[in-house]
Length: 78
Image (tube, rainbow, N blue to C red):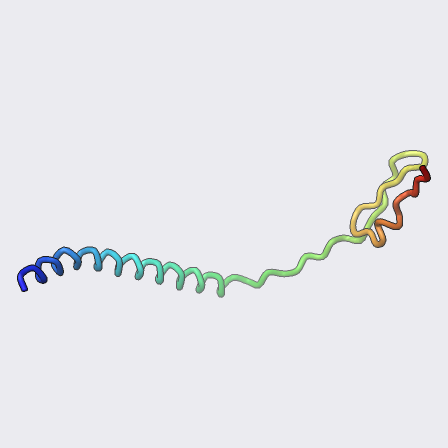
């Protein structure tokens, strides 16, 4: 019985440290969840419409979303 009391006396401080660590983790996560819920919702940002930029005499570049990009590529005959 004395051995068991001695072992329990050594384990108790470790269990207290583990309990304090778990309590700290729980409090941190609960506070972060409360902060997240208090923030305004994230809004959706839409991309601007495609615009065309002139680079010179016969060259232009389109920025933004391009439909059928593969069909717009020049065809080369070998």
